[in-house]
Image 1 (tube, rainbow, N blue to C red):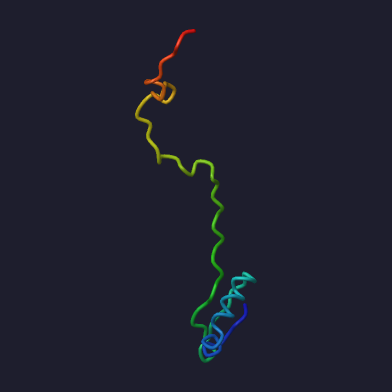
Image 2: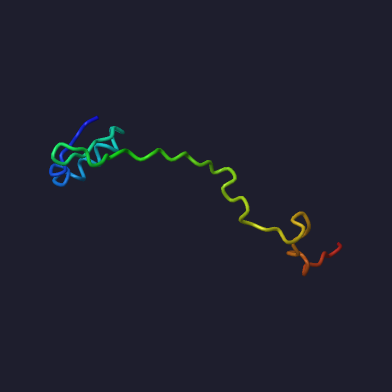
Length: 79
């Protein structure tokens, strides 16, 4: 595992973090040669499927197969 002194980490923090993210290799941080911590890459989040993502977000109150009432005011003229 690569090691970096805390003084160097303070000077190059953003570059070190980007390097860990890009290479996926952890870095041990030392102070006076003694390890004090590790910088590890984040765990990969599982990709979520869009299928079922709206489950339990809607509620049906009435019959969804019946007429909607849009034609209630219309009349049919016979020729």
